[in-house]
Every structure is written in structure tokens, then in C-alpha cells.
Length: 339
Image (cartoon, rainbow, N blue to C red; front, side):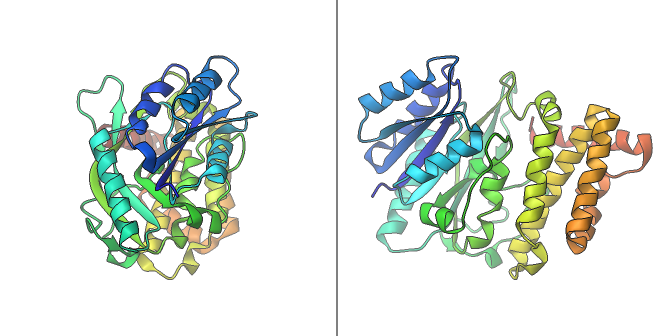
């Protein structure tokens, strides 16, 4: 059995996928790299995937499918994974080689010692185009280091400190057992990839290395603000799927419950601020409908999310309130370096 399966969703990724793949080949025979060509038609993505599979037959597998979107590519990668652990790396991102080696050595040691691990967390770096200083998402203030721990041993994560797809490596069978299935033809499903498995995670491990390099700045990228506003319906769809996923009031572990609330709060705030930033009445109606949806779905959850700091800041009344919401958003952009 391979130690780690890494899925790379690719859609017309010729311009950057090689950098991603080359950074992952350092893992050697301990890893399998699943290049999922998601119906690419405009460039040489399928050919490049096949070339790597032919050159590294014991490491790389090329999988071709009809276009189903990022989530379906992740689903396909998980379906083909044979590794004990599973990681997604987007085709325009890459990993730090020294940190990668440390990740693999740590996973291998845990397996050899027979220690159960459901989720490994490591740092990621915002590789923002044109930025002189690279922001790093670290978790050392909240998580014990270099040992197995549980949710109850965590401290509270700070505002803006979130466990994202870039941070996590999950145990493969746990992902299958929890019924993870991402929707087709939908953007922003990486939030579901992280959120849905969390109640099934019993044992965690934090390795304080800057592993994942998250590239921001490519034109047309899904996290580009203009693109997010244009795709606000998909952002709202994922937001509602998260609202539907669990009754957070029923989660017994207080630390886990608080974290999942925090995640839902920031996702709902992002949906709301994108609606506000569009300056369109149609999107402001969608924002109001999103909050009404949660209120109808689960009033206790609505009450807590609405009372949170992100909930309050994105629901300030009137045009002046919306302006203050935008100012707050820009301040957070400067602090955390996203978008």
C-alpha cells in the first residue's frame, strides 16, 4: 500500500501543471500521484498527464474523464486512491520539498508505530502574485505539535485562522466511510472537502512546516474577487450545503462544535460580503435570502451565526452599514493576504 495518494485536478492546466507535478515527484515510491484530467480540450493537459504516467509508471497515474468540475475530479481521485492517506493539490499550486519530506517521514513513522491518525494539519503559504511578503497560515498557537491529539486538546483558533484544503491530509478510508461526495460542476467545494469529514476526525496531528504553496493571482482564478462575484450563486450553493450538512448544536465535542461554527460563520460572511461588493440589488436579495434560509433551516444555528462578529459585520443596516462592511473586508485582506 502506498503511504500517500495525491490527487491533482487538472482542467486546461498546461501552463502550470508541470511545476505542481515536479514538486510532488520528490515523494518517490511512497506516493501515488493521480493526475485527473477533467475533460481538458483547449490545451495539452491530457498529453502531459500521459507523459508523466509513462515516465513514472510506479508513481503517476493519468485519469481522463468528461468534465465534471473540481469536485468531481476530487471524487475521482478518491475513488482511485490506494494510499493510506489522501491529499488534494490544485494544479496551479505546489509544495515545498523539504516540508514534503518531513510530512512523509512523519506519516511513515506513525504508521510503523501503529498510531491511528485521521487528519494531519500543516501550514500553507499564500503565494500571492506581486506580494513582497508571503503570508503563512500557521496553527502553532492552537494545536499541540509533533504528537497525536484530539479536538478537546486544541485551543481556539483565531479569527482568520482556518483549516483549509491546503492544510489537510486525511486518512483515505475515513473519507470514504464518512460518505464524502462533492457536487459536480460547482466551484468552492474545497470548503465541503474540509468541513464534511470533521465530525469523523478523532485523532489529529499538527506538523509545523510550510508545506503547501497556495498560488493567488492568476487571471480568472476562482478565488479572484471579480470571479467570486460573478459566481456568487455557486458560493451560496456551497454555503447552503454546509448549512444542511450538520446540526451543529448536536455535536458533543465543544472544541469541534465551536470550530465548525467558526467555519460556517466565515463562509456565510464571505458569501454576504461578495453580494455587498457587487453593488447589485439582485445580489443583495440573494444575501438576505441566504440568511433567511439558515433561519428557516435551523433557528438556533442562525441565532449563533448571526450574533458572531462576521455575522454582525456583514449585516450592518443600510448603505452606510454596507460601506463599513466593505472597509472591514479590506482590512482583513491586508492582514491575511487572501484574494
